[in-house]
Image (cartoon, rainbow, N blue to C red; front, side, top):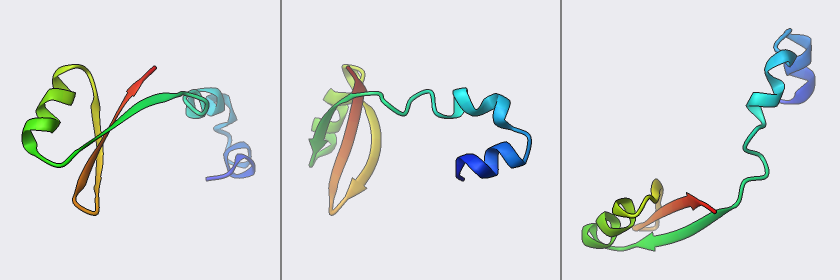
Length: 61
């Protein structure tokens, strides 16, 4: 969804909240096992996805 689509459809009032996290920075971690993943979740990391068998996690700086 691009900016013009948002403005055209009258939801431009919500644009700020839609892009609120655009410039956030994250600490990133990878895990190969459930044990590693559990440790990251236990200290506040959020699961993002699995790519090529590697689980990816992030946590806001």
